[in-house]
Image 1 (tube, rainbow, N blue to C red):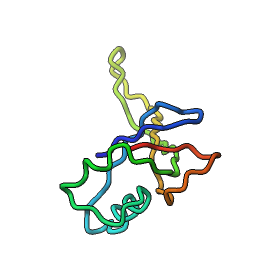
Image 2: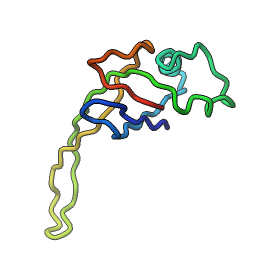
Image 3: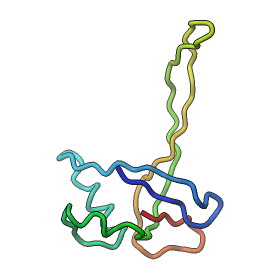
Length: 103
């Protein structure tokens, strides 16, 4: 799991968490992350060298519903939850109009 800090803009200082999958059915995910960080390839032992690296990402809000039992009534209530997710990483050329994320 990766933790990104928003640098600048309206959401400066907030965190976004991202899970970089290494599953065989998602072969594009890790190369896309590395490309967004400006790193062509990386050995697992070098992961800590990326701390402080700046990248630009497209962030979206995923909304989903879940059932939660109300502790007072014992009844199930439907709760809408929102979660910030990184949809994709961009080439390492931050634009003045986009938020920048630091790894």
